[in-house]
Image 1 (cartoon, each protein chain N blue to C red):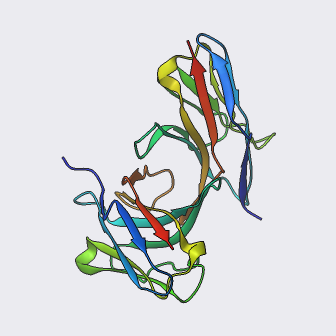
Image 2 (cartoon, each protein chain N blue to C red):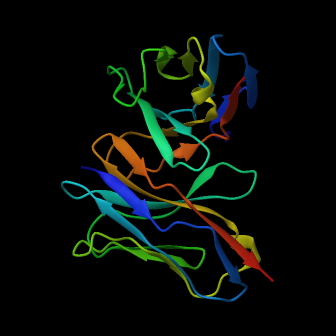
Amino acid sequence: GAGVSQSPSNKVTEKGKDVELRCDPISGHTALYWYRQSLGQGLEFLIYFQGNSAPDKSGLPSDRFSAERTGGSVSTLTIQRTQQEDSAVYLCASSLDSGSGKTQYFGPGTRLLVL
Amino acid sequence: GNSVTQMEGPVTLSEEAFLTINCTYTATGYPSLFWYVQYPGEGLQLLLKATKADDKGSNKGFEATYRKETTSFHLEKGSVQVSDSAVYFCARWTGNQFYFGTGTSLTVIP
């Protein structure tokens, strides 16, 4: 069975441009998470989807960041008007559900570089 | 507040040395605790976990015990190998969120 996949693997963009990052979770996983990993930092929680419920957006750093999840499967993280401080690795993870202790499976990440 | 603090690296050990990577947490309630590992060029993967006090998680020779009294979940291995070279992340789960530490880089030299 395929794991979590993300695309693109690398993205270089110019400051001010919009970018879209895609995540394909493991089939059947109802919970999906986005994280940001900056150089020398831990993983920063961004947003969480559970089934058809409204997403938990409490980790999004600004209103330039948004995410959607279509049909309870694929998710897209959009960053508008990118800034240099948005450069990081963006990680997606999925799990069977959000219950305590459920294992998250991570994708390989998208490396974003904003010039 | 809610946070995870882990020992800063980088850590360099000789093969067969004993490893300890400290991790402490602050949280309300009783979080589940995890260690994730990121090998060079690979994605994060679960190493071990413990979901309640006094539980011991173990995998691949690594162990960590959930210590409520000291709010700790230190990672240990008795004899490290070169293949253990990676970045190790301590994490806790509370409610709907994972909180990760900043990661500890381990290099094991032959």
